[in-house]
Length: 150
Image (cartoon, rainbow, N blue to C red; front, side, top):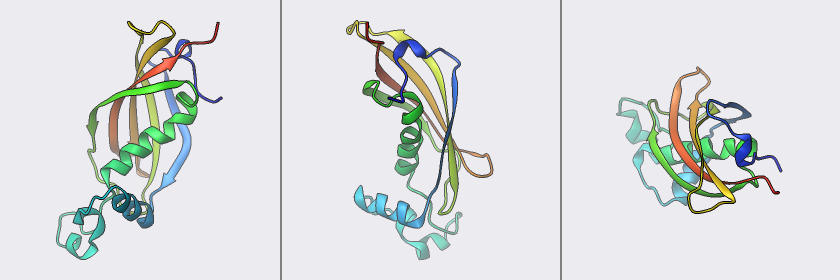
């Protein structure tokens, strides 16, 4: 098990996740096709040449998935009961093919569950940065976590 139990989290705790990911054209196109997203932003290079970006941008849902996915091994693997929601999802700068992201997670809140005595709720802030250390994505995520076995 690599995740942490509820009692092992504390407000202000920060995780610098060791996994980084270079996002390829195949990643972006495959994700967009798999999720049935036909947006020209992600799939049509000729169309995008005439935009402010000049090239296709990475699907923001892929960015969000990577922000959370990369964090799992250090935080919630095998100790999360469920995700309770994502809030305040933002993408201040676009990602492009061949950008490399790194993820940082901060614990914002730790509280007991009112309805589940064997669980607690942890609120995380996930932040994604590109290779130039520019913030390209952020979100808050609430997770229902296991408490340590008695």
